[in-house]
Image (cartoon, rainbow over all chains, first blue to last red):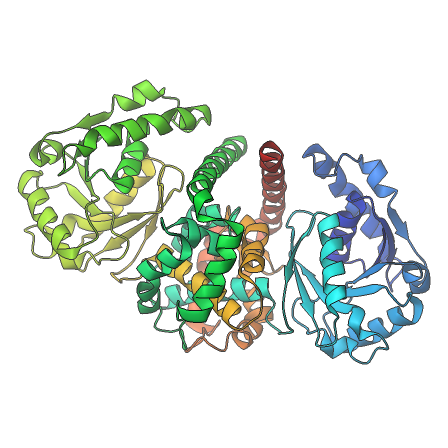
Amino acid sequence: MKIAVVGIGAIGRAWAISFMRAGFEVKVWNNTPGRMDAARELIEQILPDLHEADLLNGLTPTEAMRNFIPCPTLEEAVGDAEYVQENTAENVEVKREMFSQIEAHAPAGTIIASSTSGIVPSSFSLHLEHPERCLVAHPLNPPYLVPAVDLVPSPATSDATMQRAAEIMRDCGQVPILMNKEDPGFITIRLQGMMYHECWRLVNEGMADPESIDVAVREGLGLRWSFIGPFETADLNAPGGIRDFVGRFGDDLNAIHPRVTDPVRWEGALLDKVDAERRKRLPMDAHKQRQLWRDRRLIALAAHKRARARQES
Amino acid sequence: MKIAVVGIGAIGRAWAISFMRAGFEVKVWNNTPGRMDAARELIEQILPDLHEADLLNGLTPTEAMRNFIPCPTLEEAVGDAEYVQENTAENVEVKREMFSQIEAHAPAGTIIASSTSGIVPSSFSLHLEHPERCLVAHPLNPPYLVPAVDLVPSPATSDATMQRAAEIMRDCGQVPILMNKEDPGFITIRLQGMMYHECWRLVNEGMADPESIDVAVREGLGLRWSFIGPFETADLNAPGGIRDFVGRFGDDLNAIHPRVTDPVRWEGALLDKVDAERRKRLPMDAHKQRQLWRDRRLIALAAHKRARARQES
C-alpha cells in the first residue's frame, strides 16, 4: 500500500506512524522543507515507546522508519499514491488549493482525505475534476493510540470511496466511523461537544465543581465507554435489551434534560432501527453472556488502572 | 468501621463487596430472609475473580467473607452502624418508611445513605428527627469496579454529613462526586443522559448508524475519559490550558449544537471559576509534563486493550 502524507505537523506525524507500523510505504511532503528533519526526529523519539508496549505490529523502530520516505516535491509524494492524507492548515482556501495540487499530481483513482476537524469536504473538493474520491478522515489525536476516525463524505463522494477508505483505515488498525452525509459536526466532535456543554452547564447551575464532574467521567462513565459504546451500554443495562432500557428510563432521560429542545422520542421507527441493529449485533440469546464479558472487561480495566496508579505513586 | 447494608439485591450485594474488601464490618439485612443465602452465594462467586485480579486489597476471599454478617433483624444490622447504605425498591413510599425504621434503630449520629438513582433525598428523609445525616450515595454498577459515587444532599443535609460520607467512600476505595444541592438529575445520570440524547439524535438525523456512534466512543472519546475527565481533557488540548481551549473552540461548540437552548457562554465568571480550579489542580508550569503523562497513559491503555483483544480471539 502506497500512502502520501501531506503536511507533517503534529497530525501528519501521528498519521505517518499509524501507516508506517502497518507496513505501508509512506511518502511524506511538507511545504516548509526544514520541518522534515524535526518531524523525523520526533517520530524516532516515540517509536521505541510504542515498540516496548508491543504497539508496532512486531516491527522494530528501525524497520518502521524504513517506511518513512521524505519527498522533496509534492509530485513525488503523491505521484504513485493510492491514498493521500492531507494535514495542512485549518483554512478552507489553503485546503482548496492543496486539493487542486494533489489532484494535478496524483493518479486518477487515488483517494484524497483531509484531516480537518470541522471544515466540510464539499468546501474544498467540489471544484476538482474527480471530487468523488475526496473525503474527510478526521483522526482523534494521536491516531496510532486512538483508533476511531470520522469518515465524512461530501455530496459528491462515492460509496466506493467511503468503503475503500474504511478498508484502508481498518488495514492500518484504525476503526472508521462512517458518516452518512456531510455535516460540520463530525460524530466525535458532536459527542464530545455535547459532553462539554453539559459539564459546563452543571458548573454554571452550581450543581458541582469541575473536579467532581471529571470524577464522574474518569472514575465512572468513562470506564465502560473505553470498551463499549453508549448504545451497547444501554443495551446491556436492561434484561430485555435497549427496547426494555428506553421503556424503563426514556421518560426520566427527558425529564432531567429540560434544556434540550426537540427531545428524543425513544419510540417508533427510531427505536425500531436502533433495536434492530443491536439485535443483529447481539441476539438476545447471547445477551447474558455479553453482560458477563462486560463484567470481566471491567475487572481487567480496574486491575489495569490500579497497577498504573501503583507504578506512578 | 461498622457498616449496615439494607436490602441485598444486585446493588446491595455490590456495595457489600466494596465495604468488605476495605476491611469494614458489614452487617446485612433483607426484608425477605430467604434471599440472604442467594446473596452470599453470588458474592462468594465473584470474590475469587477479584482476588485473582488483585482487587481485594490483599485479603483472601475467605478473609473478605468474614466481614459479611447477615442479621435476622433490621435492628441488629443498624444498631451499632456508623454508616447505613439503603438499597430497597426504587419507590419513594418504601424508602420513606425504611428511613423511618432505620432512624428508629440506629444511633443518633449514624449516616443514612440511599442508593437510589433518581429519587431526591428530601422526599424520603425530611420527616425524620435527624434529616441532617441523610443523603443519597448513588453508585454506578458495580461500585467495587466503578469507583465514582454521586453524593446528593437534601436541603437539610449537613456539610459535616457530606464530608464524612465522602471520607467513608474514599476509605473504601470509592471516589465521591459531591453535589452542591439537591436535583433529580444526579451528575453521572445527567452526563450519561445527555450522551444518550446526542447519540439517538445522530441516528434520528440520519448522520450515522448506532455501531459507528459506539465506535466513536469505545475506540475514541472513551479512551481518554477512562482516566481523565472532560475538563482536564480540554485543559490539556490547548497549549494555554482551558481558557485557551474555549477561546479557540467555544464558538464552534455552540455552532454544531443548535438543539441546545440557552447554550453555554464560555466566558466571564463561569470561565474564571473553571479556569481557577484547573490552574489550582494543574499549574501551567506542569502542563506540558501532564500532557506527556496523558500520552503515556494512552500508550498503556492501548497496550491493555490490545492484550485483551488477543486473549479473547
